[in-house]
Image (tube, rainbow, N blue to C red; front, side, top):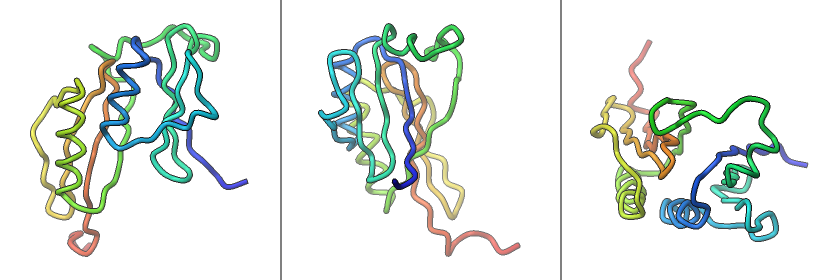
Length: 135
């Protein structure tokens, strides 16, 4: 079996979160989805499991973080161009996300930040490694 990454996130409104992640460009895998969780596919080996709080708590060993006011993690999505970055973030904003800061341009990388409906933070970026400063 190939190595895969599954990011598991608790969400308050499963349908609105499904709509948000679909707007970002994820697709839903119904094989691993039900009325308590949705498997959102970013690529062949990267998945985000959005789960109701009740479902998520069955896996948790600690209280859930309030990600609306506290940062629990940063998740990053790479894209092939700045236009794609802008498109993804614009679609996410239309689906209810928020953008806590302006575009950041590091020369070799342009990055925008979007938070989902529950405050989970995503860094969406384009990187041109040929522009990375020489050491």
